[in-house]
Image (cartoon, rainbow, N blue to C red; front, side, top):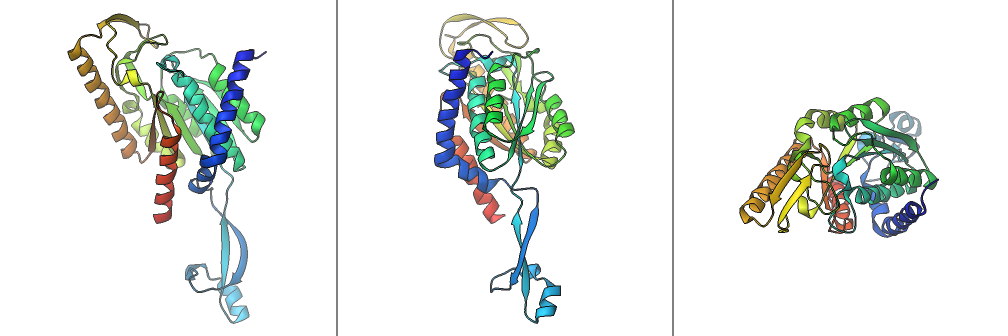
Length: 313
């Protein structure tokens, strides 16, 4: 039996994201993600401007004037949502935790996919793959995916991206869109509780760049990095005792110390830059999203950039 508050939250997510899909992002999703190939549709007479490489020479010879083959893109795709459920996802300094925001963004993508008649699958991971939901179509299936992201209780608390990527390659044999939703930070010291920021973290993708590159050769991998503002800049809240959400380690820090806050911000900026560099080297599109900033603009910018690149590619 699903608790009433969870059902209410899922319904709210569906209403918010469906509006966004209907008004803007649904059409952009359709235009930027390619199918797995081209399907033959018909042969028609050659028209000025047609690609001469499309000429059907057999029909042309029989009819004594040129005909071309017309193909349409195969549109049915599989969208695989690869979602990080490690302990740090429970943190959020505003109205939403990182995990709740991941569920909402996954909902936007999933509803866009089923509107496009695509299948949606789900991989939930921590230090291991915790849950796999095979790709299917339909609204009820998407609502199940959202529920799993919000409600699944993981056995582990850490993060191993390599495990998820290896599992993806085993269960998804055909080319798919693989969207990874994670903070992409591996903790030296993280924090636990709704008002505690992650500390002293490093780039999770440093140990996964080979696996990311391999996954992107087989699939169309997109990385959505979900970060909270206090994971980038510490607030001045005085002396705090913080507990690592993934390892259980405890640290005491004086957040009124300006030098410590500056050093923290520099470390986090360095980790972010390293993450971005590795994504670029693996030719993976990355979308940075923050819990305190509306995500629609970031998704819209990604789709617009993709569409321009596809038109000019």
